Length: 326
Image (cartoon, rainbow, N blue to C red):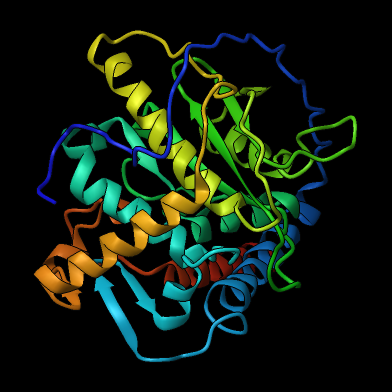
């Protein structure tokens, strides 16, 4: 598994040509609030988002069994490995592992243009935006604003007071195109097919200080109620393959539809399990040193003392408190 700029996905995914140009979906802009109320919202947003991240991504949904594999910034425990078995719902850690692996082993120099946002960070942004809070630049992974394309796994729960969610989907943001494509393998029956996506779109508009047209991209439908996370991972791999020649030619992304892609989720689950088994056998249960982790693409920084998300959130809360007192 040597590093390479060649992007590949398991043979279980087969591509056929397809074209589709869906109409952009407009979103209503939120009304501005009074200055004092806005400051209060910012304080409450940061606090609730931080607590929600702890609840959903660190605690109640996962037991603290011994790590089976530590791969740079990602720690996989036995329950995480079990999630790659048939008919199991993927957690954020399962998606984070593949995103970390893609960045470490496959993207190479393309990391400068492609950013794979971790689910916990995307949840943080969406939670703050949902409460009309302000997403401060200090919360952004380094290089976020310089990326040409951002992949964002989306959960259908962005309420920091509630634990868990029941569905994953994918948002691909094309910064140069001013467009964001939404891939959902199990769309809702509502007329609005982007229900889970709106608050993430609101966060992206705020971060980049511009409006992105939202497009529902054609997506293969999952065959059961548990493969949504697998679809997100396979769709990410397929889209990365398509984006490489786009970046090489410095052109705009047009081949967005995945309607004629055949996705074998069971084969992909098997491939991931074999990938992990092979990694443990050849590289051990701990891959990457402390220095490697410090320069993780998710935390692209020249400083090894970059504050954690919790530390940055607390800092923003203190600023909000001081501003309100003034």
